[in-house]
Image (cartoon, rainbow, N blue to C red; front, side):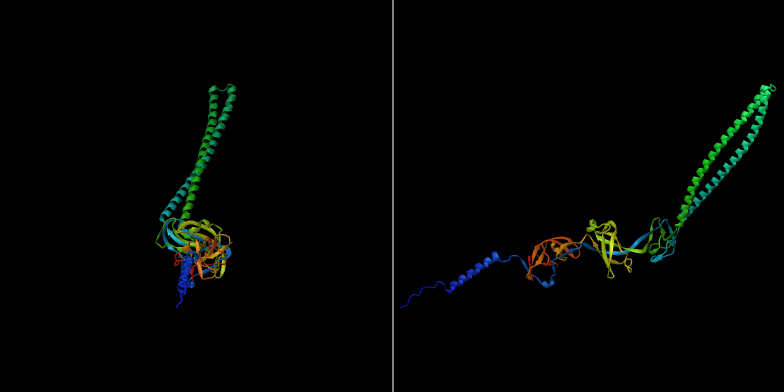
Length: 415
């Protein structure tokens, strides 16, 4: 007889079902609780720039471009107007102080000068005539007084004799009174003549003083006109390089018009263009440095031009210990302009990542070097080489500093 075999519980089918179920549950648990749900992107590590965060001295500076210019530039402006009759020196040549550069012609100035000279000559003649009249008046007064004194002496003698005769009753009253009145008349006449001549002399002296003042002013005008005529010959105010002469023979020049410039080659400075973003941080005395022929030269800001054009303004920087020997006007060179004192900081090299992140986050490479993950950071100051890291990174960590343009919003980059 056949025996009934009991059914096995752990059949191959059942074991397979249970095993499959456990695997499914495990997979679901891993997916929901244990797996990394961050978005990922595979990238080629060789195309990335990976920089190491470091601890060191943060030197706050900007790199600007300076152009070599003479330490002093003298503008040539026409003191008087006129048309150019002769151009003696062309731009680009060395000139000496006082050397004639241009000759101008102006007939109106010459006419005004002649009129001023004529007026001065007339005043000289008037002054001489007034002085001569005063001398003549003095001589006439002396002559008149001499004559009156003679007549007074005669009248006094006659009157003195008549006094004695009148007391002796030799002559009548009429004869006595006649000589008395004659003597008194002549005495009063002398007093009046002296007073009259005094007034005339004071008046003449006043006229002379006025004429002398007018003549002095007129002579000053003559001298000014003479100097003005001399300015028709345009001369070099200093020795140096006549870098430009913007006129030609036959052209008309107005008073005050710029006709050229002279560069003083005894020293040089750097004219530097700076972005207006830094205008509040730039001041006279700020220092910088530049390399020229393998040697470093220190500079200092000596002048700031406040005008802003196309988002930039200019400053002048002078060499602290003399300009380089072979430097030439018009050369340009990069200048490292210091904005603050160096200080210790956590440093992150500058890179293209900043344009996509604004410095708010970066991709930090993991310790295994196989992936990089997003991390929030805070950056501070910046120079052309480094960012100052305030939060989020430690020295020794590695950060992708090249552009993030092709990474999208992925949180993890896998190499």
